[in-house]
Amino acid sequence: MTEKLSFNKTTIAVIAVLLVVVAAGVFAMVNTLIQGQVLFGSSDQVPWNLLIVAYVFLALMASGMCMFASGAHLFGFEKYQFLGKRSIFLALAVLIPGLVVLAMDLGRLDRVYYFITSPNLQAPMWWMGATYGIYVVLLLAEFIAMHVKNEKVMHYLSYFTLVGAVAATSILGGIFATAVQRPLWYGGSTSVFFVLSALLTGVAALSIFVYFTQKSLFKQASENVSYALSGLSKLLGVLLAVALGFNAWKLITMFYTGTPDFAMIFNGEYALLYWGGVITIGLVIPLIALIVSRSPVTMVVASSFALIGMFIDKYVTVIGGQLVQPFGQEMAVYSTTVTEWLIFIGAMAATVVIYMLGIKYLSLDDHDPHQLKDEKEDRTAAEAL
Amino acid sequence: MGKNYAMTIDLQSCIGCAACSVTCKNENNTDDGINWMHFLKKETGTFPNVRYEFMPALCNHCDNAPCIKACPVTAMYKDEDGLTLHDADKCIGCKACMAACPYGVISYNKDNPHEYWTSEEAWSELSATPAHVKQETGETLPYYNPERAYNYEAIRSRGVVEKCQLCDHRLKRDEQPYCVERCPSEAMYVGDLNDPDDKIHEILKDEHKTLKDELGTKPKVYYINSF
Image (cartoon, rainbow over all chains, first blue to last red; front, side, top):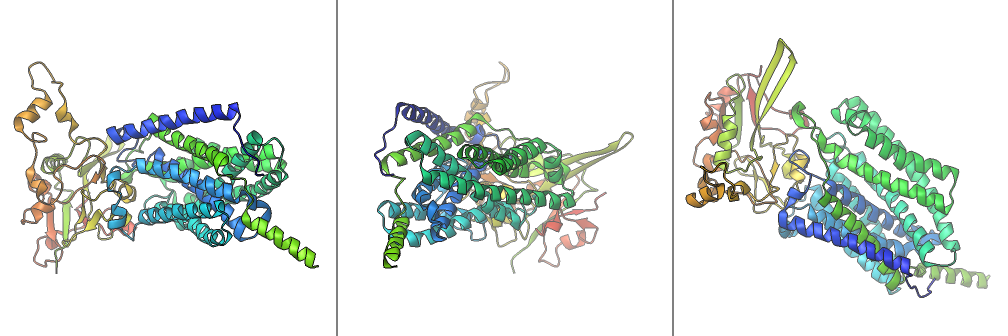
């Protein structure tokens, strides 16, 4: 699949629209740097806003794609290895805008060097920053190794990126898991769920990117892609089922605590978002769709539903977790603002633009060097016989 | 051995006047909407059997402070006198401390501090504009207290959090925090738990409780004689 790619008019128009969205996001960011966080809907009661939701969503998506790529390579799923380079590039294309989104929520971005000069090793947020920082560098190195076809370096880096993806994701969950007074966050299962959620989000996003890339850029349907989408749909189905189990147990354990947080998601303010968005749209509908059919179109529709659901899941977790106030005070209210949305949507548009540029200039559809090597070995072995 | 400061608040003496909250704002130059000393009001029951409760609430200077553990850059720290303090020069504004604090007593500076005093709009034709008043006083804000600058940013910048420092600048010169000093019913006191002769031990002989101590935060604001 090394044919020379050229964008048709529709693709160029899509890129132009995306660039406008990116520009709107950059405008919102500059505005935030000038005017401050008065442009955000957060408050002293709800300190973390849509940007944190967006960061968690994007960071998990990036980690999930990396987990899939490195896992497929290290565990020898050869048929999926052609997606390796694309997944690693996508992980970078998602994570870097995601980190920019996170940076926008820092009040004093100019002091971020204190992460290095004055670290607090007790703080999950420090570990999150450190692991994601190292992880981005490792991802970049792995991508460069793939690009220059240095098999050995790529192979060894796969171990590190796989461990890095799992570590970074669970530590991100740890920021929430250690907040002892917040029932929606507290507990080790939050970190484990973040890893599961990362893989689910990553697989869903990867399927969508793979499908549309194939559809818009290549004339012929690829057997490889159809096979990979079919395999990914099985994996997504399993992940959705496990996520349903996680949610069931979260509800059951919270039921016994009888906290206002439970009432909020069970039949209160966030019940519609939780039951409608997280459970029905995000988990049940895609799971049923995948049980009924695993065609590429079904897979893309199911993946889209799962992605929306995972985003709402992060919204309910991050925002909902902050709404209940101490000492029986009234529940806090939070509304997103246009600036928050522009930054988030701008980041997502940047991801797609970076990915499209990657397709054009970085030959993301190269075969995995390991796959080539394996094929060569297979041939040699067959000849020997 | 260093000191180990703790506060007592006698709820039967407290008359709910909120003077502690107002004087705290004066002493620490806090902006509109930002309070280091909060007060919780609760009305329960149905008429005629109603109950009204009032409770001052501030940073509990926990011995096992979740904010200190959550801060990624050690801007929240424990000082040698057992106070949980904030370094405004180091804070990056990530708000991890706010998310971690079980008491909801940390505030974030979303806007430039004291923007009100830059306004050119007067209340009426007869009054001066806030900007004019500020210009005449020659200070960042007309009621600026320079004493706060002794060991903390006198006015915190946009993009950082802030919270009660238990008037550590006053404790350093053996004065009580300003809220304690200005409480008309003398309901509050700050003493050294490490000093066996301190009056605080006498006060703590009465029935007392701390807030959310079941979370293991080891708070050091003791509420005495609750109703």
